[in-house]
Image (tube, rainbow, N blue to C red; front, side, top):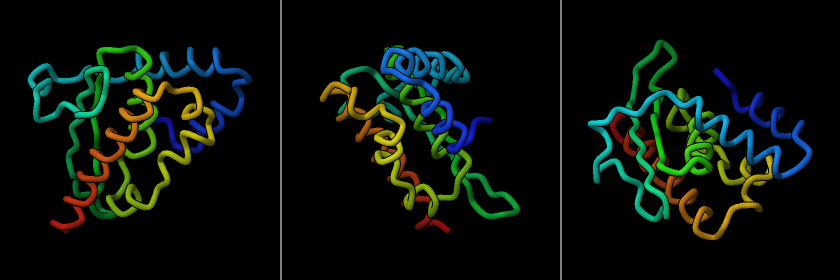
Length: 141
């Protein structure tokens, strides 16, 4: 499983936007298949120009509650952005997710500045959906 540090290191190694773009697409291709039954309006992220679906599940571990996410998109680059996002949050505690500057990491790895305004808005919508899951999990804990 790729960690946040691995992800940052991989992107720092890539010199230009074209290489980063290709890497994002490859990450998207590596996402596990998204359950067909979950491709519904409830799981669809509003505010994305492409279709994006995200689901989250709280799991209890010996170290406490962690959130596991799955996601998909009908657009290659957006599916890659979903993969990057899930690398940053899946398997982490709700508190850690809420304390992580996700958009700051996208800036750090050189992705945010190359997104169209529509994709930037979609990314913010995905991040907000994940934060909503994290806040709900904290409220239950």
